[in-house]
Length: 461
Image (cartoon, helix red, strand yellow):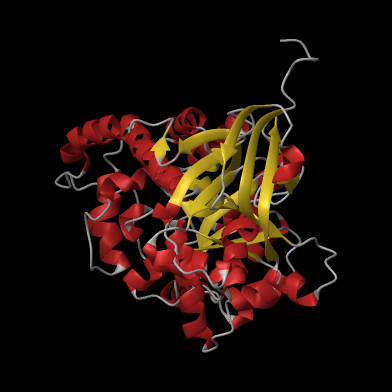
């Protein structure tokens, strides 16, 4: 086919109601504050993995395209972003429950993770990717081990991801070097769908010399740093007792707030930490995973204070070993509810704010706000189509309220990344779930055996 007869577009989605983000220069103050609006009878035109036009259906009636999707009756959203997870930990879903985090880590998770093999990591990541695609997640930030295996899965399944090879100071300099090596080898992989980060575990498992060296490497190579910090109030109190400083103080002192950083959880961030975050010269993202905090009996991420301090707060699930699910839709609903309870203010967070946190704010938190997170010309074509015709979503008085408080991840019908359909009408196109689950189940007895007495690390905060 020569240029004269080639289709004008690769994909056209027609007839949908589209969630669009307000222009930064939006004159309507309410629209600018809430950040989103809905446009009926919208057509999205995709070429070379990029949205090239957002228009009305009539305007594309005669436009040639290699593929068309009739989305009448469906809502088009930017793909959701899971800002912090450990994808292979789906293999441990539901294995250990109802324990405080110290016992959960030391007696179960870290002994079991010493049994990990690249094959288990690969299968767990593949199963996780299937769950993410089904739930309307098009991009995730992963922080784990054997990350080469996860990168291979991301490439094969078609998802977008930011990947970081986790390390502890107990591994010696080699741990940090492996994290850097992975980041440099894989960034830009999978046709640009893979970005990478340096991934020290946390200030309580990575010493200050290692954190400072990580900051220097991040600055030198232009890399994001993805780590756990101030995960809960007990960690912050212990850090104050031992060091006279909070975990956020340590990030500042080691230079990590002078580079782009993604902080997982942050439920232990205090008011005294906010000036440091406000004055950070790097971009600060914070990933909030409210379901896990409820399970562990923790406080929640101080979203309002962080937003006012200039941080980008994204939504996350953490790993399925603690959260039991990779459902960002649920994280969005819980964020809207838990923040109201925490702030004792039903006006915070609104449904539109929750939708923005799950999409554009999450993309910004992981450093991809210029390319994903909204449906607009020039953005990568990462989107999902949602069916609100079920009895639990009818009638629709306020579309934002229906999406946040009534709809569920199971209402996602189609998931598209870079213009490629990864799930069509509820059917996955790139993953054979039964075969993955079958092989993984055969490997579980060896994975969960704890009689060897080993741990990959000690949890002591």
